[in-house]
Length: 228
Image (cartoon, rainbow, N blue to C red):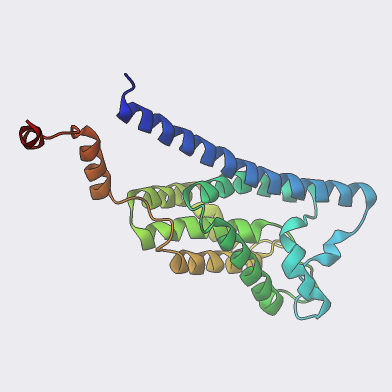
């Protein structure tokens, strides 16, 4: 005879594995895409940097769309690869309903902000603005949602990337778009606030009640007496 509780547990585990696999696959495709673009740009000298955000110029507005997919060097794209894979997978796995919306809003917000405040006569490119935004979203979601899962993710992001995020948002290193990092982080904060009531975990009390119902026999004693 099949144990109903065990069967439900196995179904739940399969769903979690499938969601994790899907989350990683989506993120991996994005990372692979930016690597292909960088490789084509490097091999054929396409000079795609010109499609980045060029502050306060009309033509530079197109960079809002293209900026996250362009990188100027091997070191640049390599430094974004691991954080993108980790944070993107966590985002799609923990907050699947708002993940894509969050990324789109961060990209638009950071692109417009860089266009407004970015250094003149420079092109801003790279996925780091979106990455900073995702990290910020995951971090502040723990403060706004206050459930165990979100708080744990917030702690993880703070421990792993807190120091580098703070340094990246300060104008201390030449050639680094701190404006993109800062605006991305602000965009992530805004998204964490906007979506704080979506993708909430199941309340623990409700989970306990479900567990009690699973353990409850089909017929209570009084029900059996009525049928006798």
